[in-house]
Amino acid sequence: MRKWHSALLAVLALGAAAATPGDAEHWLQARPDYAWSFPRDHWAHPGYRTEWWYFTGHLAEAGNPGRRFGYQFTFFRIGLLRERPPLTSAWAASDLVMGHAAVTDVGGQEHRFSEVLFRAAPLLGGFGALPDPRLAWSRAPAGTDGDWTLKWNGDGFDFEMRDAAARFALALETHAAKPLVLHGPNGLSRKGGGATAASQ
Image: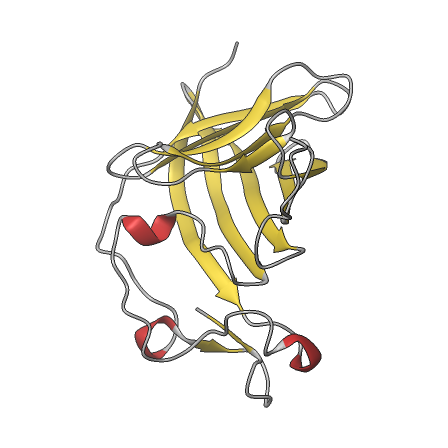
């Protein structure tokens, strides 16, 4: 197994996006007066329609810093319902878990990616809550054993994925190199002219 070290990591910890105008009354909306509290706000925010944890960065091969890679790892929480349906079935779900990962071998000019999509149900995937260190997880793609996971390590994020068919995997541990930065005033990032076109 080759060892890699991270040379740069850019993180958007989460985004809780507002719904489309027709759904605005159903889902919570991004707002400028949100009272942030970390690390609590690294975990999921049920009630918002869409939420994501997005990581990108550059890697160099240990012992061979000239060999460079780019990577991306993302989990999305996609709201289907504001609350879990009042059903006794373990398959009842209010959210979907979607994951995407990619690695680019810069010198080898090769790009690989993988995606997963599951309902948030006990055997398929889900989202943790404090004090569970898991922020999000899902099963690996069909034909690959194990899970994709994103965890809070107390000072940063650990994430891993594997796709046997695509023939690549990531297992990275990150730590904060500088203070947290919010995107936009108090973390509100406008995406368009409409009142609900924003994330936080």
